[in-house]
Image 1 (cartoon, rainbow, N blue to C red):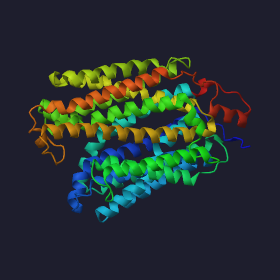
Image 2 (cartoon, rainbow, N blue to C red):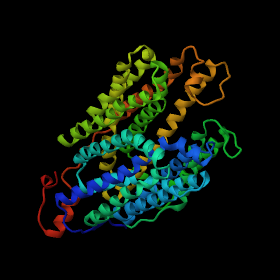
Image 3 (tube, rainbow, N blue to C red):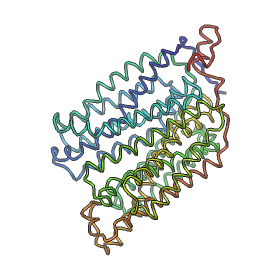
Image 4 (cartoon, helix red, strand yellow):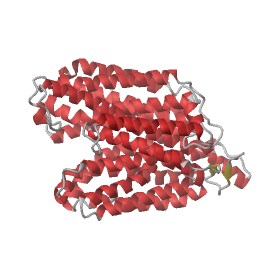
Length: 507
């Protein structure tokens, strides 16, 4: 019978914890900044490499590789420890960034982005796993709020930085900038995590299960991102069938493998399943509305592209505000009551999106921005709760696996919801244009529609349904008391020093 290995480590004091958190923030900045910088520089890259046709594959390649490896990183963290696995992820990400900066053509750049995604796929889930090792479940909500601020800063500053770098220093510089940030993260993480206590068991990786899951996810994401185009000569319906077949094979492998890639106990736990549903559905609503919001603002409120981009600022602040508020409430509570804030938020968000589906085009610009601010705050309030609830429901040696599984399904499910909402939007547009629509969604195309706001109503209605289902999932989820009496850092320190430490020493 396998037993958990709790490797003793040198005692950690609050300064050690602070250094680790700073290092983890650098890791998150590395992952988040890369995405926002690249999105701004895409036109420049396509123009200078003379290949605009394959430009979307830059984004798709990263999405595919980063999504499929996320649960694998969680498993590796439970086997080899957080420090080794996180250093490996950062190293692969930086190696991929170097390859991107040296790419002579679009094909090499796409391959390099896939390599970069192999590292980037582990950054977020591993950071969340390390946080679970150094602070209690109650305090994790507070830390998640701080990390949300990092993502907001990158979403606001990344596009500007990407534009400046690509315009004045060349598009290669947007990848070079990862190297100094990554070097700082490597240095801090390498030193700081030496004291991290280890809670792991000897595991075996189910490589067959990993392969089946990877193929199923890649084929599904390919179908989603082609938006109706054939994949490798196959019609779209056939691609979805292929993906479904591999998902069935993966499910069968989970039932028959001696040690499956995803422990069946995790998927049988109703609390974990509902927390993943809440995170996935709310993320899908956020991604769907955000993807089409700039064009909506340009069309309905007659704003320029720059002004429309500025409208996104308060919306990003809504996400971080909701995350911080929810995290603070978790930290100040007594281990229960953490469902209240996100439940209120999800209900209000569903009402707001439903209202926009009915009268959105009659709202003033400030009323529209205010509505989306509160709806985004509702989404943000679910992030720390979902993460902490999943981690609180498993044993220490399964923390990395559970966190990786949550991030995997959230990314995959969010992408799927965006595709579904997008298909509805494009179908509505196709009908309004009398079957003559064959191009990309643009302001010029929408100018031919007599009632352009109509095509966005399904997006808002879909977001309302998604938020409503997330509310029901959270409402039906059992509220287990968050662990606050057992802190890994304190435990390791007690073993090393023989002294008893309290939670106050780490607050």
